[in-house]
Length: 265
Image (cartoon, rainbow, N blue to C red; front, top):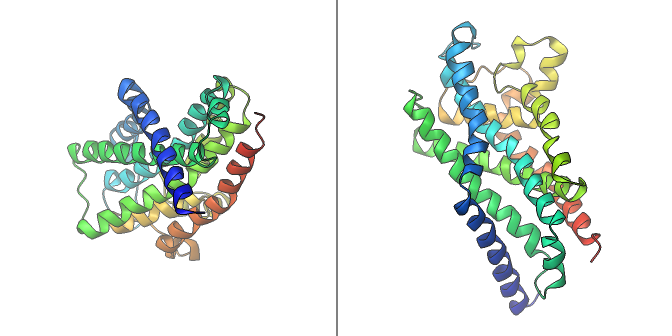
């Protein structure tokens, strides 16, 4: 790619990003809606069920829960990505972009950058909410920033899953049904309960869930109760929190790009 081509690819990507951020600026309720479920889950599990929950190795359950809530917010983000993409496809926006003299990569990369910026805002708001209800991480600034980076790394990988699904599903109603995929994906993980407290077979599935690695790594880096078991995957959570998103990106980014290229003009 020449210097001029690279410049226009970046410029076109930024124009798509500005368009996406303008939509959020004019409709901030979208971010509030995305944050509503995690915040309600914190109140439900932390205050209603929290007294009945235990953390292997001891520790306060709300401190154990919060990193899981951060990861769940990042994981659920792919539904919003898919919904926005399918809306653009249905309204002909993507076809319009494809007919314009702009870099072919700008639509996909612009969607990814926009969602990553929104994810930063979501994490910041959710962390402020956690601090307001008494969550106090002990991992220090470096550990906190590393955990923040791993959470965004997971979100980055799932963006391409959302883009691919958004280009695949036929209409916004079908995109809304993706919650049925995301819900068990987050429930069968270490977000709410440590895997060793589950039945053996289910605990293995939960431990090897990519979301569980990010959750356990975040707990470790934030300095909150980890509740990790003795399995290899749980003992190497930070490593796998880096590896899993790489694997997901290598799978779904090419699928998203290929699907976009195959769209009819």
